[in-house]
Structures are given as structure tokens and as C-alpha cells.
Image (cartoon, rainbow, N blue to C red):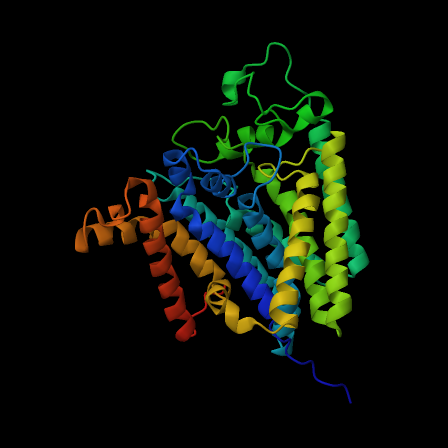
Length: 395
């Protein structure tokens, strides 16, 4: 007689890791940049400001690892989601319909959040949720395939995306730089072969000049000020595939030690490969357009961070220490929406009902730490209330 499939056990380290990156995102309200500017002699606040900001183009800060971590964890969660639904007896057709609904909601929710406080819908597809939604159907399909097929798919994605950029022509001597929002003497421009991945003169930028103008807009789309692009969902899918592989390893693991070594080794190899590709100029490491090198480099960090949380939380059994973080990680969609919707409302409520200058009791220098801390606390209390009521937003 065939044994019934058991429901997969929830891994606390995954919720902790997810909560950690969501808190990093929500902590933008602390605005370390304001404090660093007010205290220019402080290397401490300058360091924190750097790691709460995105690097201009090539490179990486802690803040740059938020989106790949969140994306990676979508892949980690998929094997558990599939197993849970199969245990409940859902058919393959139902799973596909549910997945398509989820992908569509993520895309539309991303567009909605980017359209807030605008006179009309802002059809843009570089938001984290939108990028995940665009790639999710392909990730779902790979979830039913063998690890070998998943690795091959990852290689095809990254090599194919690299070729798209490498074959796109570089700007000529008569190129109109005003159409890109990037001056010709921008200090972060790349030279030589790496120039194929320059800001707003690359293949993804050209695609968006065509694609985004298919939608109604206040004015024609010329460029994204940050250099972000719709087509980044393709290498972002690569990050989700890496997470899928890691999730399968965790789900199928019978011993913690070998799994930990596997995660650490994979992370180290991916980091090394990403470093070499960037150093050689063959493919620069740019988060904003999610170059193949960035997929590998940030994926390496994701494996190492997951390994770290797995060791500390699950192997050392310290879940109680991380309870405040787990509360956020178990309701990540709610946390994401809160971070993009109620910040101003919370701040204004305190100014109306407490004191218009409630955030100045430590002086102007630390003003953002006070109001940002208040906003973070209120957001966490909302998530804690949802946790106690077992209200978890699932898409």
C-alpha cells in the first residue's frame, strides 16, 4: 500500500531570513542618509547610509541584497507550497490556475503600488512584486522538473540574456545623450566591452522605449531614472531558480551538517564566479539591470545568508530569539504593502494627535531616527496583531 505524502515541516530559518530582509526594506524610513548629512564627520553614519542605499551602478551594498533575497526566497518556498497543495489533493490543473492567478495579482499589485499618488496608472514593471509575477509561471514549470533541467534552464537564461546585451550596438559619436537621462561624462559609465551594460544605453532600455510606450502615459517614456528595466525579470527568474534548488535541498535533507556544507559551498562558488566575471569585464555586476553576473553574485550571498540563518535558527534552535523577525517574515506581502502605503499616514497621525514636532526631542540631526522608529514600531505591531489573529496574506 502506498504511504500518504506527509505535510512538509515549516523551516524557521526561511521565515527569519525573509523577515530580516523585509525589516531592512521597512527600515528605509530611518533615513540614515539624513543623519549622515547632518553629521558629516561620522564614519559610522556614513557606513550605515552606504548600506541603506543602492550603489550607483556596478557593485553591491547590503541594501542591494534585499530584492534578490526576497526573490530567492520565493524559489525556496515553492517546493513546500507544491507539496502542501498536493497533500491536500489539488489537481495539476488547479495548481496551474492558482499559479497564474497568483502571478497576475503580483504583477497588478506591483503596478498599483507604483501608481499611488499619481494622476493615472503608472504602467511600469520593474517593481519587485511585478518582476516576481512575470517570472513566476516559468519558475512553477521548473518546479516539476529534475534538478539537472533546472540547472540547464538557469544556464540558458543567463547566457541568452548576456548575448542580448552583448550584441546590442554601442552608442555612436552622434548619440543623443539627453534621451537617456545620463550625461556623457557620468563617472559610473563603463568602458570597453563592458559598455554594453551601461545605464540607459543597453538592450533592456531600448526594449522599454518600445514596450512601455504601448501603454497610456502622461508623457512618452524615454528612460527610467534609476536604470531599471522590465526585462530584468528574466535574470530575476534565474535568482528564483537558485532559490528553488536551495528549497529542494532543504526539503529533502535528512541531515543538517551535509546540507549546511552544501549551502556554504554553493554560495562560495557563486560569489567567486560572479567576482571573476565582473573583474574580467566580460559581464559587469549591476543590480539595477540584474546582469547575469549579479544573478550569480547576489545568489551566492543568498546561499550564504540562508546557510547562516539555517545554522543559527534551526540547528542551534534559537527560534525564540528571532520571534520579532519571524512575525514579519511570516507575513511578507503584508509587510511589503505596509511599507509602501501607510508610512505617511502614521507620521501625520502622530503629528496631529501627539505633537507636530514629536520627532525633534533628540534634535534635528536624529529626527528621522525618531519618526522612522515610530513608523517601524506601529507597522510591526500591526503585523504582530495579524500574527496573533492568524491573519496571513497569501496570494
